[in-house]
Image (tube, rainbow, N blue to C red; front, side, top):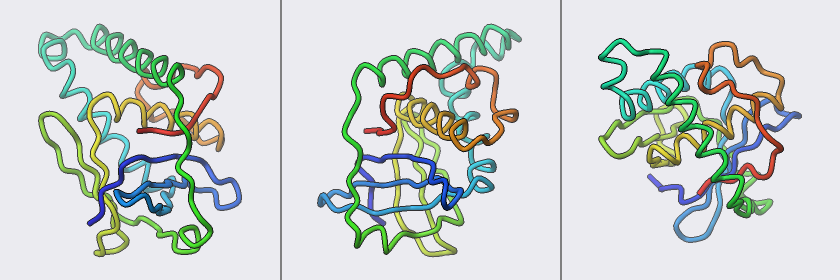
Length: 174
């Protein structure tokens, strides 16, 4: 399975899906399509991992409100850092766009320092993406921005992820 090095996440209005453009280790690119239905099922697992990583002591002590506040601060800090250091988007040649794959399954590998997402089409592995806490937060901010752009509801998102975004600078994650 190939490991994605960098990704660009963008809502494609024509297809009403999220387009994940990934840069491969050899510099080539691939395109993965993520449906809202798949993302809506995946996202709670991503939020849960962040909560378990960052603030288990606050939650154990029954300080859920404080934990939400700390999560919101962490999200905002990542958003500001990303805004201050934009990167170029992953460029996808026409040949890679034509070979785009529809992701139907995402397997999660939970580890102490990172979360690994394995994207599959049916049972066939397509690509893998490894995210640290900060990179996952960055990607979640980008996904929230794309949900807003698509006019998809954020009602199921945790309060600490529903902060209004600033001006969109980039949708690239490294």
